[in-house]
Image (cartoon, rainbow, N blue to C red):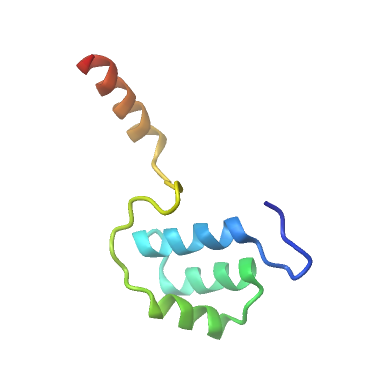
Length: 82
């Protein structure tokens, strides 16, 4: 999804939140990316991220960022187990 007229990029915002929660981004890079994607000031983006609990998130509404090597491994295991 492209940015709308307000400058809000919905998909990128979800990706930033998921990356932050999973530990793929730290607070500094997360707030910069969120500010850019959602059109927020860096201070407001930092407040949003600090308010979230950082736990391991596996799946949010079908969004999963799994490395390609793990996907290939899962597929190989499914074939082997059949």
